[in-house]
Length: 254
Image (tube, rainbow, N blue to C red; front, side):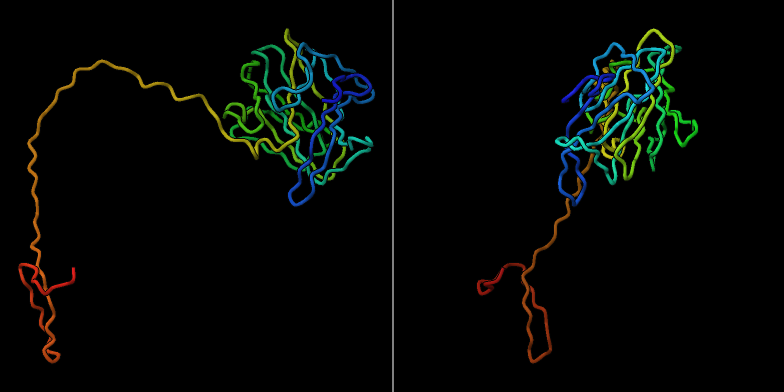
């Protein structure tokens, strides 16, 4: 994270490597800045990385319009990606009746949701869609590994596909409530690549019971086969099979 100053000149900057199949790796920076005309009121959490994700904290009863820009780390010039993904994770309400999260975003060519999902979506004009929370959650159920999500965590994710893009715009909104909102992002196709994880299986239930044992006599029948040693007597093509109860001394084969 070369810069962690969302709302300032540099903004929140992440540095990494763009990977496209059959193409050379590409060093990239993702700069997240506040869009002109918008204001950012930070929440209580520290912006930056949360596990393998981008975390942006927004004060309750506020919203902020952001720009996500891809650029060259050395020259800072915009870089256009032929295809990229942005996943919105852990869209939830802090608790019933309190602050709830939503993200308005457009420009994507495809969207991926789990089935069933806890993410609500509605068009908001200008080609944008609002994705919002429908279920309560806490910081304890936040995902930390980009490749491992529980079934419950997948229900709160939407993965968006973008093509030929260098800048993406999104508006983060946190409704009125007593607790701030923490938004989580991943620049990856999370719902296409993640594995399912879950809690360990509970231990077997121990029960006390009275068991009645019934003894049954079983008769075992053994079948024996008679072993014979045979030769073929051709006798001028009038073939005969001759067998002996024991192997003869001149039978050198097995």
